[in-house]
Amino acid sequence: MPQVAAAITQALDLFTRLGRTDLQEDLQEIEGRLERRVLSVALVGQFKRGKTSLLNALIGEEILPTGVLPITAIVTQVRWGEALRATVRLQDGSEVAVSRDEIPLYATEVGNPKNIRGVRDILVNYPAELLAQGIELVDTPGIGSIWAHNTNVATEYLPWVDVALFVVSPDPPITDVERQFLEDARQHAGKVIVVLSKSDLLPSEDLDVVRRFIADAVGDALGMPVPVLTASVLQGRQAGLEEIAQRLRELAQNEGESMALALASRRIEGVLHRLAFDFDLQRAAYTTPQALRAQRHAALQGLLGDFDAALEMYKGAWQSAFRGVTQAYDTKIEALKGPILEALRSGLDEQLQASGHPRTLYLGVATELEARARTQLEQMRDDLRRITPELLTGGAQPLVGQIQSWIERFAQATADLFELPAVTIELPLEIRESRGFSFKWQDDPGLLPTLAVPVAVVVLPTQPAVKAATRSLEERMDWFVDRNIGRLHYHFHESLKTEWHHLWQRIETVLRRLEDALVQAASTLSEDDPEARERLTAIESVLGEIDRIKGSLVGPSDRPRRRKGE
Image (tube, rainbow, N blue to C red; front, side):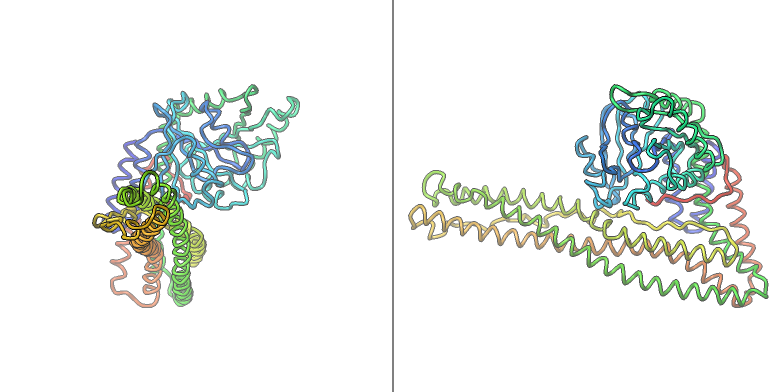
């Protein structure tokens, strides 16, 4: 622990001196996870293998949703707590406490298709005996379904995992998709344990055959022998659960701290690798042989030209995507407005003739209408605050995925040109500035203007007076609702536009960092720098510092690690 803490301190100091606030944030997140000191066990594997059912069985309660279709869409962390509590953590940094029955609205593909609600993850606390042993169980989306984003979510979570509980089943025992996923697990997870679920489907004479087949296939994919446990979670036929739980308890007790340190080390190393790439690129440019300088300079200029063209294209696409977001927003506004007017109009004429003539009831009904309108509009304000980050994330996610694929190819081409190790560059997608989505009335809404009973209501008989009073109140109500919904619409539209712009700025900052490194390299290749020796010395100094920090880590790895975006 002291070595890793010291490495984090040294790395934070280095990042501060270099002005790399983006890397500072990553290290602070790693530090926070290390301080929790729990064994993180993620249930991973292909869709419909029974991961969620197995997790529910291990904690002894059906808390997370299961079904006949691929269900899980969001990473859900289940930790010990004195009572059941579920918290949805959104990408805007806010949190929403939900009931047990509301979890499917956020965690499943049906309730939250393509994560339109902008959920980062879900935290469930529950007083299960297994969780009290310093173990955290994590449910992940299934890989290999028609929803590719689910596979991406599961793969990107692997770097945070101490133990990958890889769940397979007899139908079929293992697929090519699962083999590929195991390759990723080998690179990231500290330990892999295979669980053959639905073992009750196999007769006893076939169970050992299938178990050996899976052990051989997984062992080949991972390059090492891996234990294969069996489990059945059906009520009345549960089996194997205690063996799995005992294996996890032993790991938490005997290897938990060392695995947590190794995970933190891998994560820190991955962050340092991203920084080293920039300086490796500069060093490679300074040390390029004279015979190769013109060639590399031309290739680099071509890459930079492609970069500028692609960046301009994505800027245009970003603006077009925002038009789609605002259209969806306008649709939401209209969808919320209709029920408000309907609710306010409901029973208005009955109220006006409940007892006596409408002229004696008009002001009382108007006052009640004002209170109801205030409540309805405040609810609309809260609904808009909730859906605005969802609209932003849903609109941005597909395009960010495209930009991510492009920048990965671009970084790989740059690395190949200078014969450097590849680097993974993750783009931000979190909607962090939730303050802009809050709306407060600047003054008392004054839902209805100062009222006087209309003359027609006073002089007409009861039934015509009811119609006149109803029409009068509806006109006033429509005017007020339109006026205040217009204010809400303008305010939240401006919030959308501001945050959309901020999100692009954060993405562009990441892209420009890479471009700056390339521009510096191109400049170095194109001319003799009289201060080249001093600059190279400074570059070597930073790279040496990075190597020293890496060397101080527990169990460092030579492989670059993929980083999970937050």
